[in-house]
Image 1 (cartoon, rainbow, N blue to C red):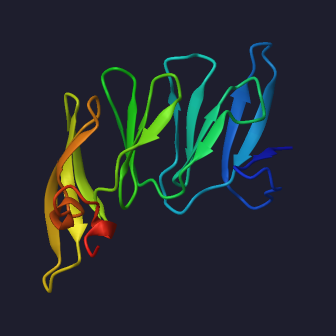
Image 2: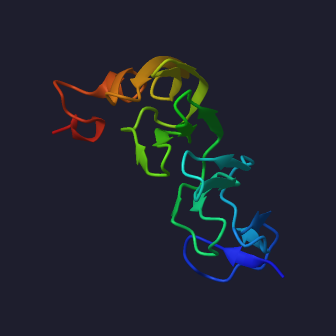
Amino acid sequence: MYIPVTGDDEPYYSQGFAVRFYRDDKSDWVANFKPGWTGLSGIYELDNPQKLLVIAGGTCYVMNPNDTKQFSVFGVGYENVIKTNDCRFILHDLTDITVIESNGDHWNSDRISWDGLKDLRLEGNLVTGLSYDPMNDADEWIEFNYNIDTKEMTGGSIKRYEKKGKKWWQIWK
């Protein structure tokens, strides 16, 4: 019988993303991961052999194959994953980027887009892509660059509306 794995420790009996894990003692167990809101699912090895990244419908679970309890759970709407040369993973949802370090730790960028990111590419440590701007009469896609090492961003639809270093939600003050 499968073991439900969720972010809130609530029982989950619907069909999710099923994964069979093999423990160090050669026994196995099956997890049923509660999915998020997208179609992105997969299993990725991290640099630490005791940690795996499981993405179930856009929700991330960092797991130890020997344990039925997750290390961490985050996100619900990830749409794409890019693996870097140094075993990090870059994920994006509709508004920002999440970087998962090779040890399983993760962090998020500041908000990049009002409601959509597309055409993400990785060149060295620079993520480039387009961010959606619905503010004008003509919907626009605005270029952005995000350095995953320095955490610096240029461009993007949110940056267009910042005034003198204020965040977008402070521009009316």
